[in-house]
Every structure is written in structure tokens, then in C-alpha cells.
Length: 113
Image (spheres, one colour):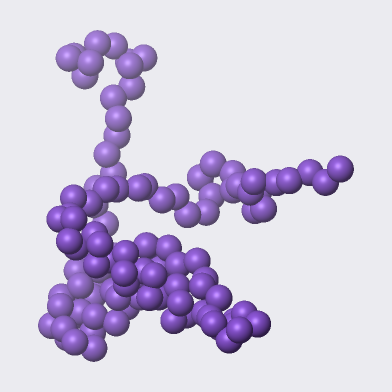
């Protein structure tokens, strides 16, 4: 009997690799429906394979892939926005935020620390 695996990739150890924090966006229903149309269009248009009838076989496109593609191309139509984002990224890299230290409960009462 063949064993089915739900995940084909091994998980990274804690602290290694990319850690994603999922956030939700509140958008109007019309915008959500239009974004779904764009996502479907990407899944068909990025397809490189065709079935036996010549129709494109849809590929799986995530929301992240779609948004990253848009963000990478923003310089083509909004050059000033791209420059602003690049400057902000550069200043963050040069001046990282100060580390925060959580309160250690073993040191005594939280109010005294």
C-alpha cells in the first residue's frame, strides 16, 4: 500500500527559513471579486502547458505571487512611488529599530521592573 504524504517538503527547524505572519485585509466585496478575476487570469495566462484540446492548463498562483508581481512592476507606472519605497527600505536597512526586551517574570514583580 502506498503512503500518502500531505506535505512533500520537510519543515525547517525553528528560527530557520522564512516565517510568514498572515494578516487579513478588509476590502469591499467588489474589490475582492475583481481581485479573484485577476488571480484566475494569472493562473491561465502563466500556464505553459496545454491539454489535448489545446486549452491552457491552469497553474496555481497564490495571492502573494500576484501581489509581489504587481509591487515589482510599480516603477513602470508610478516612478515616484517606487522611489519613495526604495528610500524607505534603504533607511530601514541603515537604521534598524532598537531591539525590544520582554519582561522576564523571574526577576520579580512586573510593576517593580
